[in-house]
Image (cartoon, rainbow, N blue to C red; front, side, top):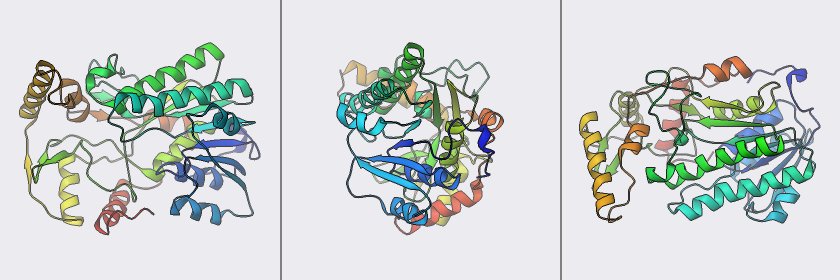
Length: 357
């Protein structure tokens, strides 16, 4: 990441920066990027007393040159939020519930936690910007003003509960909450929406490529472009969007350059990691099957979970183009890890078992 001039930042090197979810897959890279840019006063909030291996390595590499305070807490606790937000000038909110299948759990761990943290920031009155980590999951990918192009102007889900995806529902409501606090309390914010964040420590094949069922991998992506962003590139985008002046209340999508198709990704995965049998499902057939699944789920009152339907198909398998032009033009971001190198590193980590490094 190229170092920017300090006068283009909204915070000084010694101002306190809070990072929630700091030991996570993206969080520890955000901490590393902040330290490499010269920010010397960080508070890292984590739910667990023990830290990830990669996070400890980052701290050791910058020992003596920066003050990094590691705080253990839970954002569901109002008191913990008050401790975390105290005197913070900039907040990177990366903590979120992942993997929850129930809507109440996802709502609690993404929306309630964000509300508690925002309330603490409002009370503290020291924050200059709140950076919220969102996701492409919030886009409905229909009715886009630019044909088949998903950029920041694309509409988000107006009824995310109908997608049948708790994560989508929670992230959509979280974004709405951040915007509401921006209007009500004049809190400057930036919302970051990455596509598929990949890299060592996050093994597996994304559902945009296909799904494994009954011992067979159904390749659903075909020639679709995959909205990949290598984890280090994503972290650098998060940091630059967070510290750069003049981008308050903006949304930024994060995808890398030279994105591969689903078909090319699957071919490279088989060649580099392991070989397995896959069956290509044409787009028309996958759309019909999703419609059928959604209809039966509704008709049977949930006998099948409503995870596949027309809304889900449009998001995951509709032919779509992606843009990172706004991120480049407004904050000067450029992906430092080329897609070819990112895929090589990713496949290598998958081959040795998804090492969390």
